[in-house]
Length: 76
Image 1 (cartoon, rainbow, N blue to C red):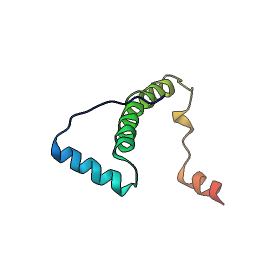
Image 2: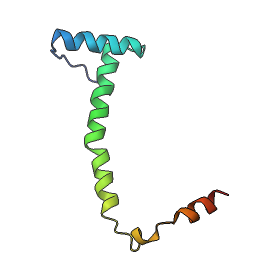
Image 3: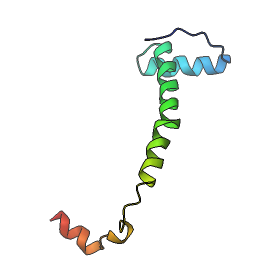
Image 4: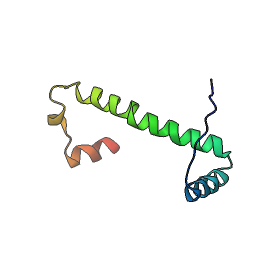
């Protein structure tokens, strides 16, 4: 469900946002909505996933690095 909101921004910010929205061929409303959604996901989802992966503690993972020769042997 979408929710209408009213925002107040500086004229320079509004000009920049209108220009960027026009470049992407979308409405200003949609452009700002995408910016906010991307910001929300970047701050919440990414860092939750990052912490989850870091907490896995897979034994021996760091010691399983391949040598340069092993990497190129796999490509053949």
